[in-house]
Image (tube, rainbow, N blue to C red; front, side, top):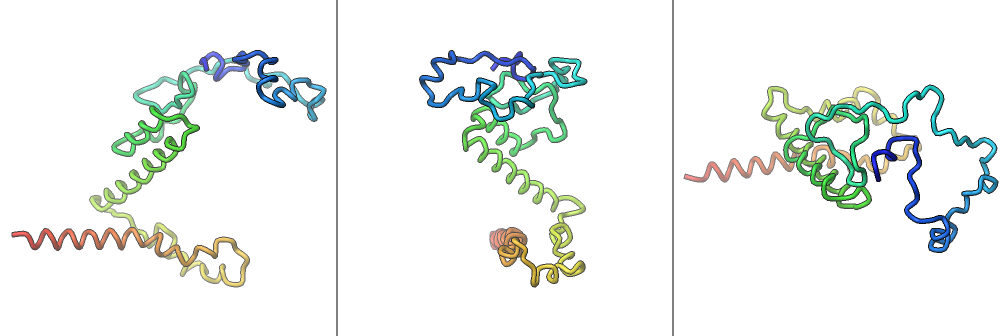
Length: 193
């Protein structure tokens, strides 16, 4: 798709003629005739809403690498810059955008993997800082005891009560597993001469 059509009010031309699309795809173009559309009297064909005095917005300057779907010729005219890609997780996300279409499962699985790597590295990095993560306060467990957490669940028809027994394992499981792996590693290193 050309940039001239991607972010403007211009409608891109069809890759095939209407007749060939109707022959190839059953039911294609059933709503082309305005009389066949249920919302026809209220529908507007004005692609330029009131107050829009531009067709293509001014482009934001691009500094460094920006993620861009391979389906588009260019990035959107305006984009976020708050979370630039960094480290291993950034490399994984960059791979997802450069190699795979957004229609592919691999694209989304790589983005999820990049997020999980970022969480892991942030957690490990917090131990190296003067203020490590505090799962007791940051996961809301303290509020369970100080703000009627258990009482809000008893006798209620809440849908999230099903997984409450799993929550301690999900929250504390990785911490316990990490502590055990650290203990074993330190023990092995201490045994070496």
